[in-house]
Length: 481
Image (tube, rainbow, N blue to C red; front, side, top):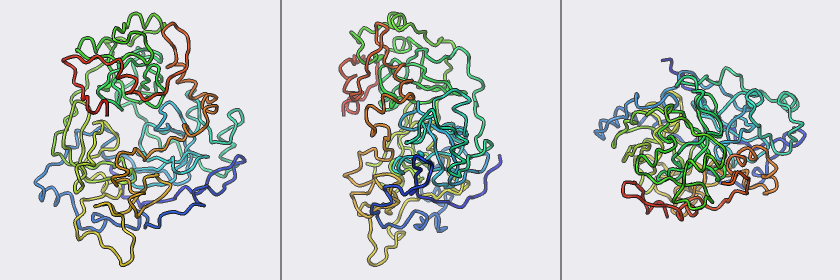
C-alpha cells in the first residue's frame, strides 16, 4: 500500500465570501471580536514535540491497538496523498441535510482532512471531512447525475453556471483525479430502487427501527429517509449496512417497528396496507446481505476525531461496544466526555493514522506538558488547551468556559455543526427544490395524498406509539431523556 508523505498543515480561516456579483467581500464574522487564543498550528501538542509515541504508550499502559483489519477503507490508511488545495471548488453533501448537494470550497487542509465551506455562507457552517470521502464530488457531478445543486446564497438557480461562476470569481475547481472511485462492494443491485420501502435504524436514536424509504442511490450507497420526517434524520449507508433491513424484519425478530408519524393506529401498523396506500414496493428481502460483526473490543486503542471539536483527533480507548457502535473514551479526560460512535464512522482510525497522514494528534496531557506563560489567558476546563470554540470554525480558539466545547455549560450542546438552512425563513425553505424532493417522499399520507410534515422532535412524537416487547433491547432512560 502506498502511504502518503506527511503534509504541512495549511490554514485559511474563511474570512471572505462571495457577493451576488461574484466579488469577494468581507464576511460579517471578520467585523466581530474574536478570542485571542493562539491558533492550533501555533500550539504544539506533546506528540508534535516528539515527546510521545504509540509504541511507548502501549507498553506503558499495557494496552493493545485495534487491529488494522477491523477498519474499513474509509477509516484506514489512505492509498493516495491529499491533493486538495485551499480555495478549490467542488460539490458535496450538507452533513445536516444529507439529501442536499451544495457548492463548496476548501477552507483548510490538514493532513488527509479538509475543512469545507459553503459558498455564500458564514464560516460557522464549515465542516470537516476526509479527502477520500464519498460525500464530495467534482464540479459538474450534480448536473451529470441529475441531482439538484444548492447554489450559493444570492444567486438565481436558472442563472447559475459553474464555468461562468469560476471564471467570474477567478476560482479553481478541484481536479477530478482527486476524487477517488468507490464502490468497494461492487455495482449496486438493480433490485434496489429509489422509492422502495424497508426498515431502518434511526442513527440519532439507535433503539428505534422505523419505516423508511430509499430516497437516493449513488454508486454503492443508499440514502435512507424516514417516512413523514424531515431530511435531518436521513443518512447514507452502504447496501450491506446493519442499519437497513427488509420489510418484516422487526416482526420476525420480536422488535417494535415505529410507524410513520401521523399513521392511524400505529400499534397495528400493517406493511401490506401501507404499501398499497402509498402505491410503493418493498426492497426484496433476498438482496440484503448480513455484514460480519465489527470485531472491535473494549480496551482497544485507536485515534478518533473529537466530535465536540472536530478539528482535533485524539488518542482514544474503546470502553464498550454493541452490535453497530463503539463507545470511545479520550485518554486523559474525564469519562463524562465518553460517547458512542458508529463502528463504520469515517472519524475513527487505527493508531498511526495521524502520523502517516501528517495530521496533529492530541495525546493525553500530563501536568508538566502544559506550559503557561505569565499573563497568558487559559481555558479553565481541565485538559483543554483553548483550541476550537463552541460556535464552530468561526473562532479558532477560546479562553473561557463560555466558549469552551468541553465546559459543563456546553457539554450537552451539539455545537459543531450549525444548521444554515433552518436559519433561513420558512418561505425560502419551501421554495427550495432540494427540500421539495425530500418532502415528496416523506409527506405522502396514508390515503395517497400529500400533507405538511410535522417537525416536532422525533422521540416526543414516537414515544406515544411505542409498544415495548419483552425481547426488545431499548434503553428507556436514554429514549425519553
